[in-house]
Structure formats: C-alpha cells, structure tokens
Image 1: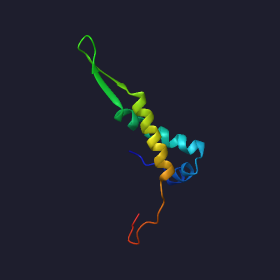
Image 2: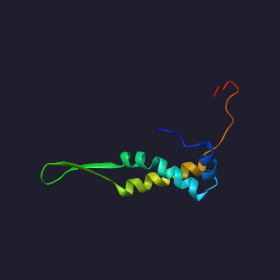
Image 3: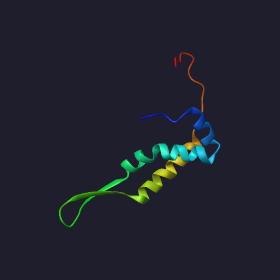
Length: 80
C-alpha cells in the first residue's frame, strides 16, 4: 500500500477539504474490504455487500484519527 504524503497529512490535520478527501479516497478500498458482509441467498449462492453502517463508523474513526494525529520528531538514530 502506498503511503499518504506527509504534506497531505499536514493539510488534512488542518481540515483542508481536498487533503481530507485525498485521505478518505486513499483508504476507501481498505475500508470497503473490511466492511464486507457475507450471506447466502435463497438459491444457495454466497453473496457479499458493503455494510453502509459499518463503513460510516469506519469513516468517522478515520476522521477522528486525522484530527488526533500527532507529529513528532524522529529518533536521533533515524536513517531515512
């Protein structure tokens, strides 16, 4: 998975609309995959769908994570 650029995280932390939307788009597929519900239909075929309530709760959690994200300095021995 590609990382969200640091500059985008900084702007999302300031609630810049475009940056927040970028982060949401970045994680949309992951959230949808984790919010899958599976069931068997009346013909015995297994089906799945994205649970909208669960996805909504995950998106709220992501927004809270953006708001609560804290930047800190890397350790002295950090080598990029």
